[in-house]
Image 1 (tube, rainbow, N blue to C red):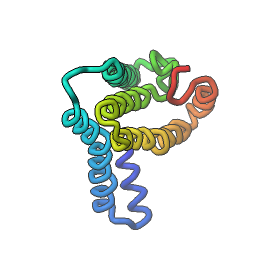
Image 2 (cartoon, one colour):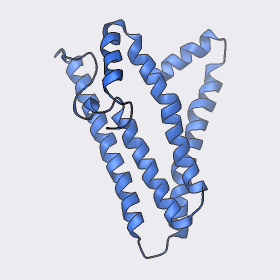
Image 3 (cartoon, rainbow, N blue to C red):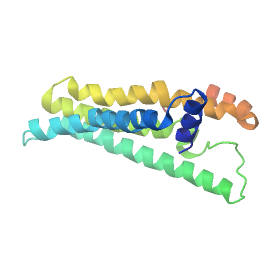
Image 4 (tube, one colour):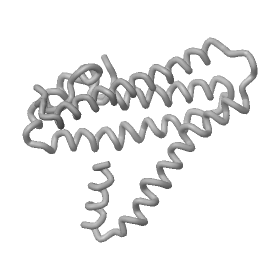
Amino acid sequence: DRRYQEMRLDLEKKGINWAISFFVLVFVLQWLMLWLGSVLPIYDIIMYKDTKISYFEYVSVGVSVIGLFINAVADRQLHSYIQQSKQGKKPQDTFCKRGLWKYSRHPNYVGQAMYFIGLSMWAYSVNGSWVSILGPYNIILLLVAYALPIMEKRMLAKEERRKDYQQYIKDTPAMIFF
């Protein structure tokens, strides 16, 4: 992943031991985020669920499934765009603006956020605990406050697409479709 390569170079420039930093920043923090975001809500669902399924639970599962679908479609569309570029079929655009990417600059993040929102809704509906909400919204905060700005900066860094991407920013919302 190019982000890890960039992170390693940045750490080395600062004289920081990248191996230890990677272990903490990449593996430990990602494990913690996954544990808070998925394992705790799923634990709540399994441990506190009664046999009757409520309407709200159907809605929350639907939100998660739609989120997974949006994420998969967005990733597939981006992959297709990248493959087309690699095969010498120069796309008309300097970055992906097709399909879901026409409506959101980061539809894959929209899908991920929807998955975690649905999961937290479901866990909260069976347990009523704020811990059920904490983890998933922590991951959404990470997407919005960390991943999205890094991706935007990377997209604006290349001179050949900067002007087009600045217009794309003006015309297209970052994460929502409206």
